[in-house]
Length: 105
Length: 310
Image (cartoon, rainbow over all chains, first blue to last red):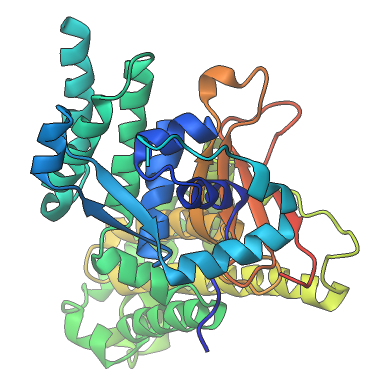
């Protein structure tokens, strides 16, 4: 039987931020207030554990926005299940972040 | 412009830590993210060093496989026991006989052992070899008549080993803290026999390390006599150090290695908040908080038990 991944508080907050629509590293940093040295390794660990997956946006979209391409992170099914378990444990997690503006999503 | 160059240099330097196969993508992500940073860009870039270290430590390489292999306490003890058995075979078994050079002539050997026996100073690692019992120092002469060995050599051997052990512990205590951390006993803590198991596990590791160092010294003695004492000293020093570090990184309940280290906080903000590393037990027994620097109010690592619903 697979063991359910246990999330630390920090990882749960980062996963919640991704769920709330802050889907690239810097936006997660800005929203959570965590330093870059915490957020990026945490994102890699969550991806390694299969809770999130990453993908690069196309160059055409980035060119249209006159910015470099972003690496987006999205929650997987396993990540949603783990986050749901964390939300039961930390009820305030749901209300932690505002819904991002449309252009951020 | 100069600051931007410095920031890019930080990221480029950190990239050297990232495994080559993943370096290009890692660099592309950090450069892209830097584009959005308006303030404290250098602090942002310094975070790339932590990230690069994470990539380095978690690269899918044989080291990771070894760490995984030692995650379980049973596998850890089995691995140590296998190493000890190998060193025992090197010291006393047929492997040692094949490796050992022809024995020195009995006269010079007797002179060396007699000199060691006469020496009234406390034995140092370098003196250990001269006090090794004849049979142990030269396995291939095991069948030699016992009259060739002065009896004082046998008597000095345990004392020399004990002294080397004490010296290694003294040196160890001067370079690394010996405390294992704070593990509060509360209602979520395991029962006393389970807590005792943790100490039994540490004692078994220590005993295996001592056996391994001793056998290695005995195996080396016939080949490079002056090195025997140093092999034992270094074996005990690094073995004890590893045993303590390994013990600190284990869950006190299931004794498995803790996982998922995450850096929290910032050293520059230590006046107002805690910073350090948080680790979690993959079986949900608790969290370990390791302070970045030892302070009067957070001197050593602390364990937090979680309730059974985890």
